View 1 (cartoon, rainbow, N blue to C red):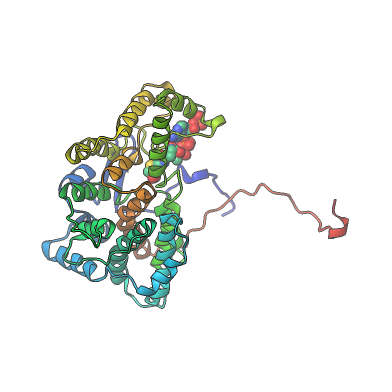
View 2 (view 1 turned 90 degrees about the vertical axis):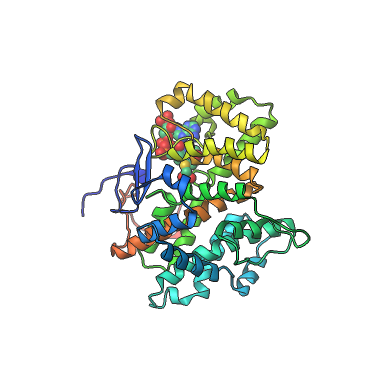
Length: 391
Ligand code: CMC
C-alpha cells in the first residue's frame, strides 16, 4: 500500500474485468458481448442491442417482447418532474437539463436507495423515460408544447414523434430517419471503460443509486473532449464554411495545439490508433442518408476535405490521429432535423444501455469502492501562522 504508480488519465491502468465490450485499438475491432459492431449495426434493432448489453445475450422473441412492452408502459414522466424542468432557463443546455432530471428521478423512486431490489424496474424506467425527457428541452426551445409518448409506436419512432410532431398537422415517421437513428444509437451503445462509463462505475461503487450514477455519466459525457465533441465538430465545420472553407488554416491551428489550444474536434482517440470502426460505418451512412433524404449539406464536403488533409499530414500520421465516432455523426443528426445542441443528448440516449450494463456488472461483481491513489507534491509539515502575522 505504500507504493503508488502514477498513471495520469489512467492511460494504462485496468480498473476492472468486464465481459461486456471487446475493443482492439490497434486492429480497429469493436464487439458487444462477442458480436461485431458492423453486424449489429446492419442487422439489429437498438432495443435488441440494449438487451444484449444489459442481460448478456440477444433476446428471444418472447424476451424481446416483454422487454419492449415494459419500456412502452413506462414512457410517461411524472408530472411533478415538469415543475423542476420549468425552473430551468429556456436557454439551458439540454445536457444540463438531462443530467439534472435523471438525478431527480432518484427522488421520485426512493426504491432505488431504500434497500428494495428493483433493478429491472429501474432499468425499464431509465430506458423508457430518457427519450421523453430529452424531447422536452427541444420542444421548449421552440416555444412549442411538449408531446406525450405515443405507446403504439416503437422506441425510435416514439422518440421522433415526441421531437417533431406538431398538434396542427399529421406527422409520419420517415423510415429512413428511423433506420439512420437506429444505426447511430447502436454505434454509441457501449465503449468499455471510457470517461463517462468509468464515472458511472466509480459513482456506483459507493453504492449510490442507479439514477445518480447514470446522471454522473451524463455529466461526464457532456465535456467537449468526450460526447460534447459531436456538437463541437459541427460548430467547427460551420466556422470553416463561414470563413470560405480554408481547411489548411484549421489543420495548421491543430498542429500547433500546444500554443493555440485548438484541437481538431472529432479527431484522435485514446484507444483507437489505426481507425475507429464506428467512424467508418458513420462516414458511409452519412453519404447514404443525405442521398436518401435528398439533403445537400456543404459541411459534408468540408468534413471530407478536412479528413483528407489531416490523413496526409505528418503531424496527424505520426500521432495516429484518425476521425472518431463524433466526426461524421453530427452531419447525419443534422440531416435528420436534430438541432446542434441536442447532438450530445442523442449520444446519451445511445450510451444509456452501456452505462446500465456496466453499472449492473459492477454491482454483480461486488466490486470494492473505487478509490484512486495519488502522489503528494505539496508542502511538507509547517507551523500555523496567526492571521495578523501572515505576510
Ligand atoms: N487535434 C490536434 N492534436 C491532437 C488531437 C486533435 N484532435 N488529439 C490529440 N492530439 C495530439 C496531442 O496534442 C498530443 O500531441 P503531442 O504528442 O505532441 O503532445 C497527441 O496528439 C496525443 O494526444 P493526447 O491528448 O495525449 O491523447 P489522449 O488519449 O489523452 O486524448 C482525445 C484523446 C480523444 C481526448 C483527444 O484525441 C482529443 O482531444 N480529441 C478531440 C476531441 C474529440 O474528438 N473527442 C471525442 C473522442 S471519441 C468519442 C467520445 O469519447 O466521445
